[in-house]
Every structure is written in structure tokens, then in C-alpha cells.
Image 1 (tube, rainbow, N blue to C red):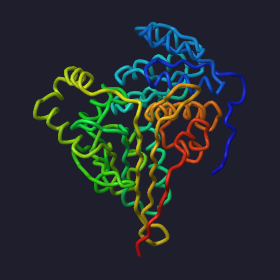
Image 2: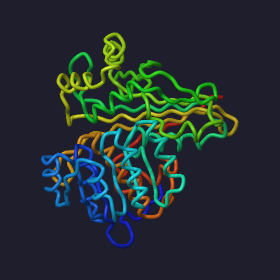
Image 3: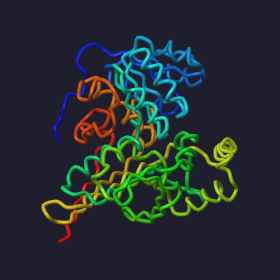
Image 4: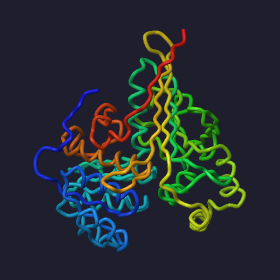
Length: 375
């Protein structure tokens, strides 16, 4: 793996983090430790801002578009950690202000709208910079390029409790709104060589990794822009979320039988009242690709298991570490000139080696990579 300088060249860059929740705090912590960025954290919640201020970063209370614009103007970049339904409005403000934009959204319509905004933009618009979408797209593209003829690419990611309890065997580890959105929206895929959509919560699979039993099923948004990038190059491409066995059946009961997909606010209240959050989680990344290389049928795989860690006296959960690492790496690579400097930038533009060599992307180090060959 080629090693690159960790620090950005030139003066410290002024950046704004919109959203001071769990992920926004983790982003501020990582960037503050790096020392290359002057950081402003903006949020409407005084308690969240007070916690961010303990890191030694500037804070600003904002609650509307006017407040966002005041926090955006004159900055080098904005890292958007607000709920997914704010993404297009924030990206629009960044285009108007000429500021680089990065986000974590899994929402497909939002990403399409941001891509349209980027057509004539003079700065970078780079959505989907988290775990999935985000890092998993970088892994998938790296696997895909190894084949002369790519047959299938299957991407699986889960943020799971290390000590599961209850029938769902799940704890809330990130945005409940985002979770519900990916359980409800149609899922992009490539099926028999054609770009398609498949239903969320379908395609149930079961498998084991390191002796642990899992299930996976279709969820929305995890592929980012891979269906477009790999169109005409792969027969089968899909993304699924990993859970412990039994989770999918209960979600179908809630969403379909009890019709809570029509009452998402109620479902959010139910989940947040009944399912505790946890910092004791694990992120599982598992990707497989098969195709022809050198005239032989070959399967390559990538797997990684990441847990939480302490950073500068603060405990970050696995989902905080991995999500914050993804967006901070994207920012770093743009600041270092290693990515395009304007327009829409998809995750596939990031080389896996560059990502893992980055000081933030190193959180994903320790993956296992394998190859199986069939005659």
C-alpha cells in the first residue's frame, strides 16, 4: 500500500460541521485531533453544542436555513451531519456560497438532486461519505476493477450490538430516521445486467462469519452511485444490511402487517422508546465479487470487523468511528488535492489504498482479503 502524507499542505482549513449529535461530535473530535482544521460546529441543541465546545472548537446555535448560511459562508468545506431530509437544502446553500460539501446521506433522491446541483458547481459536492453508502462503495469498486469480466458483486454491511438482547437483537446505533428510510425505500441493484430496483426487506440470506450467524436483506441507499458506474460491466450487483437472525421478520410485521411504513413518525417513537441505544457495537463489512481473470473463474472477498475505541479520552462507538472516518477521509483527500476539486464526486473516485493509508481511514485497517479460484 502506498503511504501518503497525513497532514494537509498549506494553512489550516476553516470547516463547518452541521449537526452536533453522535456522528457530528465524532467528526469534530477526529478533526480537532488532526490539527489541520479550524472547526465550527453548528446545531440547534444547546446541550449538544456544549458537549462539542469541550473539544476546544467554536460553536454556533442554528435552527434554520439563515443560520446554516451564516455558518457556511467563507468556509473551505461543510460536513453535513443533519438528518437526510436537510441534505439538498444545505448542498444548495453551499453551491451559492462556493463551499465544498460533504454528507452522510443514504437517501437516493437526495443524492440525485445533489448531483444535479453539481453540474455547474465550482466546488466539490460529495454526498454519501459514511460507511454504507461510502466505504462499502470504495471496497466494491476496488473488487470490481480486478476482473476482466465481472459476474457478481455483493456488498453487505451491518452496525450491530456486540451483546444483542430481545427478539430484534438490535440496538439503536445511529439515526432512527435514516434507519427507517432505508427499510422503506426501493433499493437500487443490477439484475441480469440491467439496472433495476428491488424491494427493501426482501432477498433474505443467511451466512456465518467467524462462527457468528447473521442474516442480510435488501435495504435502500447502500450502493451509492455504483449501479451507474458498473452499468454494463456486471451481471449482478446488490447491497444488503446485516442483522442477527430474526430481525427481518419482525420488521416486516411492523412495517407491513401493522402498516407502520405509513406512519413513520409513530414507528420512530416506538423504536426509540423500546430499543436502547448502545456504544458497545460492532461494524461488520463483507463483500464478495466473482468473475473471470486470466481465463479462470475467480472469487475475491473483503471482510472487516470494527469495534469502538477511545480517542483523546472519549469513547467512540464502532458506528461513530467508521462513519466519521469516512467523511473526514473524503475531506482530507480533497484538501490534499488527491480528488477532483469541483463538481460531483462519487465514492468510486477514492482509491481503496488511498483511503486506508489516510490518517482517518486507518480506522478500517485490519481487513481480511481472500481469493478462491475455480477451474
